[in-house]
Image (cartoon, rainbow, N blue to C red):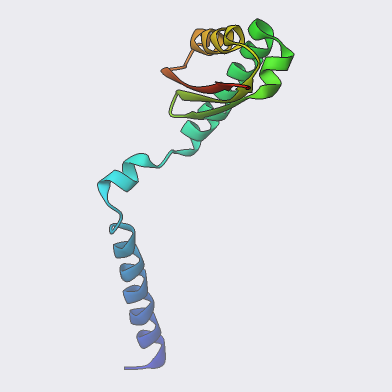
Length: 110
């Protein structure tokens, strides 16, 4: 067998091995990955929620609250001065179109 054929066969075997490794991820791992479109949607949703909090609860509250989104589920974290700020931030987040649910982990400053 000449060198060119050996290289072609080796390349084919390497490609097959690499393709097989991709199948090793569990179905749970594959299900938890976001597509580029989902990531973009979550990023846009995060910005909309942050803006809604600033509008409804005030800039001070918006600056104190962190917003993270994963597949339409919004998580709010941070420390604020009053229960009213918490309520208004959660309410504002729930009103944003595309939000599936809101996890409230905002804490009161002591």
